[in-house]
Image (cartoon, rainbow over all chains, first blue to last red):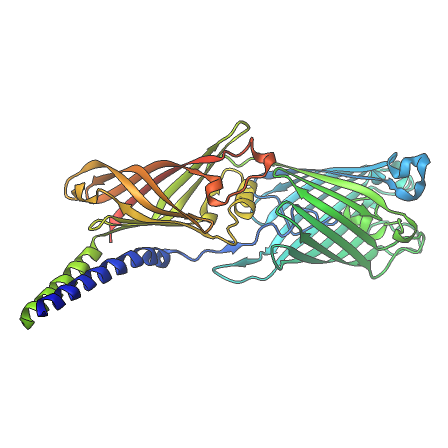
Length: 294
Length: 183
């Protein structure tokens, strides 16, 4: 009887020993796992929420070709084919220098404007090693009016210049919801008229609702604390859908802004949503990757 | 009689302890995958694979972070994590199994052994039994485990939208290379 008991005991121990080691081999690997910084990606599908900048930069050594296109106002009736006869366009390139810095250049048909800007991520939302709840990015841009009649002949080159600085504060709350607030300062070297201010202060709100892995709805609104007095203008409001297809992002939207660069849509948005002063537009972003090797 | 029992107990404890100590481990194993499709080939490598082999009973385990797979194109890596393997929901892939013919391996002699590894592969919380051939190479106390096998994406709940069918293969090739050292 005693013998029998000890055999049972021995068997139990063997089973226990075997079981424990099987358990512990995977446990051991779990313990071995290093905690790493996990940066939040895809707060927005691309570098723009709609017209306005998002906190997204191209990845390092990636070039994004951005084609922005707005048709005319839809309230113009059949003769203008509800705005589709007209076009405003901007062609631009965004380049990722490193994990934080991106540089861009562009040319718009609106006032034949050249633009150049930089975006620098001051803070990156992340989990893991440390918790950072927000992405904060700085934006500074310069805009050069190319239009011949934009300034009187006896004026200087610098009268063609405008500057915009923005602080973009964004958080990806969940996979489906991202929000951004964007305080902005616009400075025109030459005001539109003697009665207009040179400086404007604006607060932008933008958001994305991701509907599926590849489709999201987005909106943005720019509230102006001061506005031009020499012409009627409105706060910019845009609503749209984004479609990510892998290498391209298609953004389709309705907006009351004809131009799609900061200086102009922040302060010179002339369309009125309430009387159909709405432009249909699309932006196409195409990514080119230059990273080689692995 | 009581003495006998005690001795038996102790020897079993010792044996199970000894079985435990024959542990070979790495934190920077390498797993590479390759997808060959009509429009493009996609390759990614993870050089931070944790793996452990218990040479006394053949137990073999792997564990890795999906986010640690590195692609040529950063955007592809983002899509891989975000849309295909959904790393935010399923951060790890793992394998737990056995080298079936572990007795055939003599750790004191340099040489290469053909092995069969059988066990449970878990990707995206889907666990499936696999049995794949490979080799163990013993060289001066270091054991290098290598294997090449195929995995069907559909088996592990990785859904490829129709528009990517010509970009991403349904079956991808996995290359395993782990250099295990005694712990």
